[in-house]
Length: 468
Image (tube, rainbow, N blue to C red):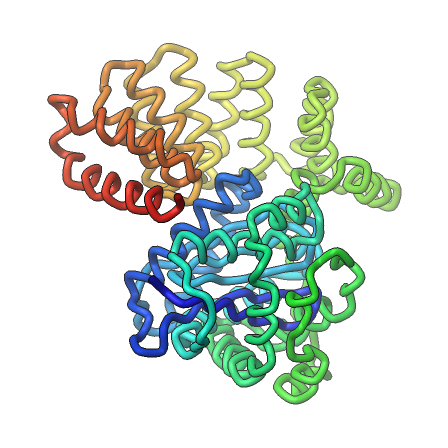
């Protein structure tokens, strides 16, 4: 049994960095325990369906994270980066290398460097192992219980978007507030260390340190976004304004980074796919009034129309965007998706192939797999599904689900069940994951997956046992 310790590392009320869980002071936190806690927290979040899963955004985030991790020194374990759909300004990390960014945070920042600044700060909390340095003679709890409390705290601090606040309150244990409150008073030293190390990572990765000051300034100024319903123990954090003056004072007068069209496109995509349609539509329409040739605004309106099932309108808007930006791989892949939804499968293949010729992204790769499956071209579909699974790893579960169902339908049952076991494990549906693992093992062709599936079953059964 472990002792409860949730230490919330924060920049300021609008930006929480929830990181550290400590264990009994008689022994150190093992890396195995950190990894298991991180996995369980992630499964809790995935099961609540709050993750913002978009292949284009996922790949963008992964590219930045790889750039930062390359300069962060030897890493004890892999890192995973995700986006949570919520209108709260928030970013946080949990043990085991799991880092999360809210959609509203992406929308509020100005460039890639500012996003890298926040991610580097989170990476620094984990590489510094701040959670392993804390101890508290509090309540005893299993890892599964700790994971439930932490996942609930993260969602409770989400600003209310997509009902995340209510989901978080439902997950949290009602008695932990006082224990958490007691842990917040002495976090300034660790925050300062994360600032310093994060800034170092940024510079080594080639980003402008001025962007860390810029990111923190935005968070400080946008505190009104934070929900008034957030529990008090999520608000007791060292002042960001004071740290901006002390740690980043030399950057206040430095020139900001130049315009970043790539980041603007990602912001527009997140806004179009996650924000309330009325809000997002207003933003894009105002931009078009100022510049009728704003391709990104047209693309954003197309994505909103597609969300609202107005597929003909979405097609018209996306065609206009493509006329203004015909070599945009993102627009071409989205047109492929739209063509599939409009049952124009051959058109979809054409758009996806054009997109892949420009950028072999996950969206176009998975799209080609789906399109060839619908056309009955199973050999081509299998090839692209394999590529999509390799590209997505476990960070985009939908690829695992689609590939698993496809391979099962064409008779490769062991492979299909194995991929579905990974899918259900990643979205927190452990009974289904165990079922597919056992089915894989019992299949005559399942030998290549046996050892992995046996380990999955042991892990999942242990989690389910602790959760009871």
